[in-house]
Length: 224
Image 1: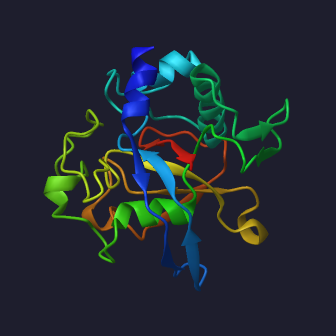
Image 2 (image 1 turned 90 degrees about the vertical axis):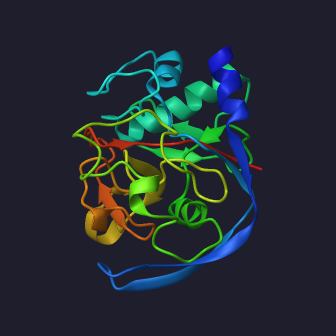
């Protein structure tokens, strides 16, 4: 129960607003309105992942290190398991074979950030590509020593959220481009093995929802 309490106490309220996004790869620009939501100031760590999902997939072991080597499907499953343990309504509706995942926008359970919410939370009211000097805010290629690090070890952004750039990339809810890439989902933020140019608030990557790698994790949010 202490782990559940820690998660609850680490959730930060994010104000409503709007954001302009662009993706040069698909030559697209768009605006998004953001409703108020809450987000965990830390990436999901290995201790809470073990507690809720009863699994420990990470390559770099450590209770306070971010969980990695998790697929998008596994991240969704974790959100529902954590919601159940906390007494919340599951946000995701998943078929038995996990082939179809839908969401219940009225549910109060844990969920992934949307793509727009992630960039909005990362920028924290500014429109800069980073919320500080990279050495101060991110574990990346030049300072990570080739591994992940305990969450919260660098400076947060001005809304108090840690590790939004570097350490591990973060799965988001959104499909990237269904017409071209099918079910591929978006992930954000850069990781421990990325060069400086990879750790930007505007960077967006994608992969199949079954994809797992040692620099990809996630954080949780809840609708308000």
